[in-house]
Image: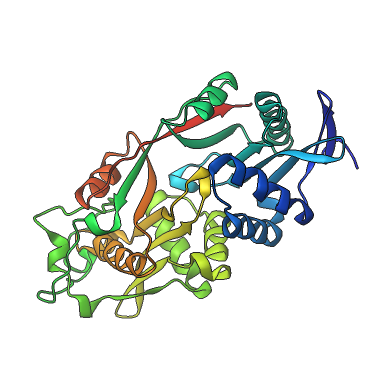
Length: 342
């Protein structure tokens, strides 16, 4: 193998993880968190095999035995970003191992890989109560990121749909035009005026991608096919996480929410739904489309016994933050971190 796939770091051999390593990975992780997260790691492996170019997974080997692991994936366009990054999702070392040394060797390899891929930063999130990971991230040179991690308990949201009233025509048909990407209720409780039978809310399908790209471009000003394609592929390929939705009015796609369930991402023990992105056609703003999408998402998640939804928003994206706060989100007990590597 060349030095991209395998190299020595401080007596450890750092190499790509293989499917044969995952039993050892699950055992190491179970020893650290107190229970086996078999389904989570099986899903991560499945997705990595389906999208190998997007996933970076390394193992640390000593005397022929796996003693550490690290999993990351490329992010391109998530949460409105134009700049790519690597998201560190999981890292662990064998009990009784060399802890920080193994983690540092794996992170160093990840930084090398980021340089090879021309990716300028590594991002992650962690609970502020996890003192060991806080110390590791501090020593590794991570800093607090510019994003806020928000959460909402599925049964505590502030969304209600009523059958009365109607969805009005797009603004450009009424003589008033706007390009503002607004998800919030601008005048009163707009989502309460949304007629449930006027909006078709259904599970995302692969043939929705062109519509999602169109809406996303109207909001961001950029065509992000690669990013949208990645989310659609994951949403439609993995039935265990298929909770993304599309809203249609009179047969036209007018909004979407891209979400997934994570049973263990970032070391979480309980099932959580991660909301990656939400978008509403500006021609249908101020009509509760975003609220309707989240309302249906929460109903579906409740049926799956997922108790919490988590998302990330830029600290200065006040319209989006206002929307999330309006429907019941609040700051989570997790912090975002970033390390520049280029």
